[in-house]
Length: 212
Ligand SMILES: Cc1cc2nc3c(=O)[nH]c(=O)nc-3n(C[C@H](O)[C@H](O)[C@H](O)COP(=O)(O)O)c2cc1C
Image (cartoon, rainbow, N blue to C red):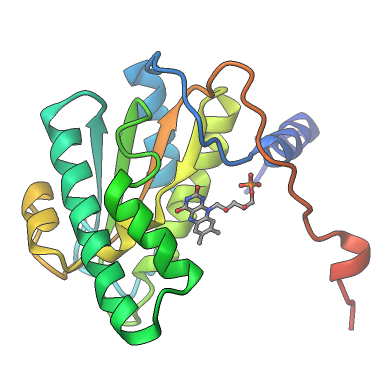
């Protein structure tokens, strides 16, 4: 089954997995369309909940929004307004906790990654039973992230996209039915000059694994 895969492929994958990090500052130079398509192709090959989407060959849709376009301005405004509303609603329930303060800031300044990277990519997957569309989209984004890394292209997850699945304005913007698709998203672009991701401590084999 895996006869075409060599130890060199495996070693290359290890390098890419270790090199993957969040990029949160982007060069304005847009990556080539072919590279964006290669990244999306990797996402389309990610696993999905087969029973949940049985009978729908069109269960995963991807939308590419280019920076400095009318579409990006519209997406940015819809996301900003929705986040501001959410912040107000939450503030009434839980007070001005740090999470609410962060939402308020986003509601004023916009969602990081939307409008300051060459591309905002929205991935969507039809909801079904069992309800696993969100997990499927995580696999999709992870495949995209690894492929982007292999091409020297940075990716920032934009989780605020998830809350837009029942937003009539955003669904109309994407031309999808309201509430029927789970959503997630990311920004794509070359890292800004000299961008260094914050150092992250990851779990280790020694500390995190128990063989029972
Ligand atoms: C479910 C999930 C949602 C995330 N949402 C965001 C996000 O909205 N914006 C962002 O900049 N990073 C987001 N991240 C990225 C994490 O903050 C990041 O992966 C983590 O801090 C480790 O850093 P690294 O990606 O540089 O290795 C998210 C990660 C996960 C797993």
